[in-house]
Image 1 (tube, one colour):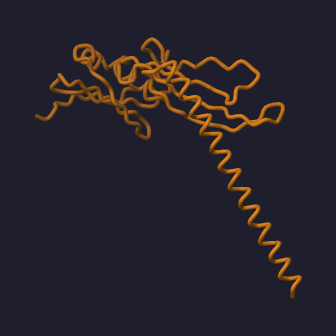
Image 2 (cartoon, rainbow, N blue to C red; image 1 turned 90 degrees about the vertical axis):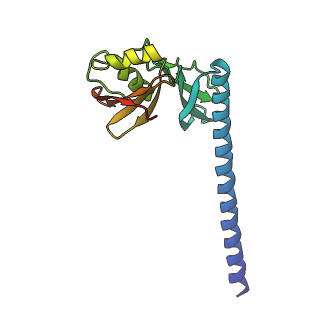
Image 3 (cartoon, one colour; image 1 turned 45 degrees about the vertical axis):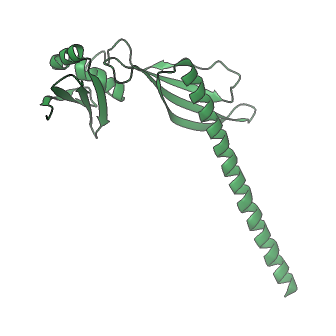
Length: 193
């Protein structure tokens, strides 16, 4: 009877130790991920103080020496809300590994998207540019130029809805851009008084 009680007590202690170990591993991993996020965001905000920066993904990896590091994928937008936003994706390794990091990937450039249509519109910045530069959106482009309009984008299942508005105008435009690179609808909407 006494041996059964001791075995039960040892079993309970082992379970408690395993639970405590898993908690410390979980919190240690999150602290390291938080450190990686903080480092990346501080670095990009220091280099581009006016940019809109967000972390897309963090992956835990191991190098050739079985040392853990985090691969951080970041989205950085310059001129957000303006007619020609520039979208970049950066890839960081934290802590730094023994190889040269890849240069940023430029998603939008020179206020153009899609060399040929139809094409894939995967980012809101691409939708914003398409909404005033694709065929059928000439009136929207004139509105933007004459009113210093800014955009807001919302994502739908198969399209993007881009709203161009200016405080000084009596109307605004809504443009629906298909994710397949087509202009679905352009609507000029009067503002309510």
